[in-house]
Length: 255
Image (tube, rainbow, N blue to C red):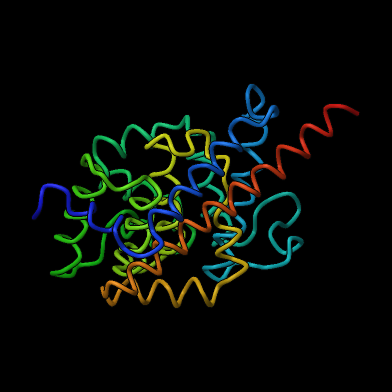
């Protein structure tokens, strides 16, 4: 393995530009007046929107009225996505430190949260028995946590795409993959409070999202590049969602 296996990804067409735009957009979101001190409020709303969008992509209910029953979350997919989002909310949870020091443990914890209502307890946090999955997860954990010239949006996209490709647990894999993308953006300082909501873009363009994920899985330069650009653009769109949340909070505070 090269010393920096992700560095070359920055040279793929459109990737560096899309990455820069994502970083600039998230920076603007964090500088919004409502986020300078009041970010816990906007982060909570971002977390909820992220959970709903991620759950829809994994088959959760589309209609808001179907998400809860008598004040309790009734859909297991949404319930798992919500637990995951709450564990990452605001970038202040213990999972951030676990990811930086023991990423496979963080991955197992995310699956335990995401799939708690969907599989038997002895399957939670345990990757499928497959000769390929274990080594590839170890390689992924090493690659995405080592120093790299690749930008944080690209690192997040690689982790996201690889987990969608591997489907390591056989349940809640999409929710986990998108959570890891969010976790990387928080841990790297790209979006330290988790204000962005890229999940909404992926939810609104599911065909493009799934087609690009398949292209990434094929491993061609064009397929990988298209996936990286799509993820960076989703981060940029997620930053716009963050600004809309902040504007709403700021408007409420003036009433």
